Amino acid sequence: MADHLNPVRRALRKSAISAPPDPWREVARLAVGGLTGVGFERENETLLVTSANGQSVIDCTNGERLYRNRDDDGLGHGFLQAQRLDRPQDAPISTSGIEGGGLPCLTTDGWTCRSIPLDWPETFHILEPPGASIYFSKSLFAGSNKDATFFLMAKAADETRAFGFSWTGQTLIWACSSDLFIWSRAPENRATRS
Image (cartoon, rainbow, N blue to C red; front, side, top):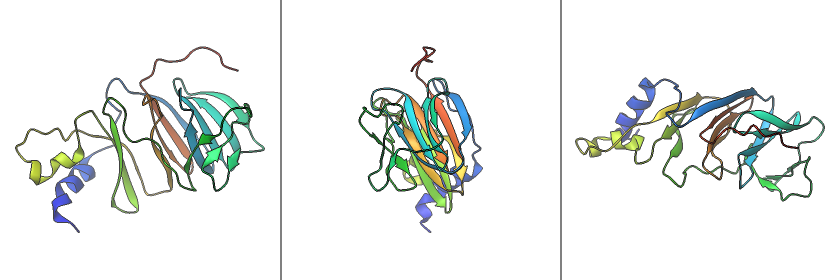
């Protein structure tokens, strides 16, 4: 066990799951049985969710379900992509989930999310404000006025499928095999979409 990480371990172990800071807000907590993958459209906050029970499309600005298909998930197995079944003419969406892949972990304005498995299989999923890092809590940075601020968003020993931002950096999600948590800093979209 690397002793230089003890300050990070202590910080994580004494932290509690908390709400993210402004401008972030929790948008939804959804039960999704058998979640296999998630993926964002590139230009907006629309999230494609695949599961053992089909496919859903979620507007992450307000948590509204835009589409549901209980018969097919649209997942291209082995290619880390899924097709929106309500818009088959659109390009496939890159996914993160049971087969691999990943979501962005840094926004253009400096927010960072990290998954830290210090107590494996329990993994700590944290959000860091711009300029901050949990690793600044290491003794190497003692007295340097570096910002070690972080927010514990989830702690899980189960099967995390994805933790990361949308391509725009306006949405943060954490997904495991049974649940999906959505946080957003984008203006709520109240327009009805088809």
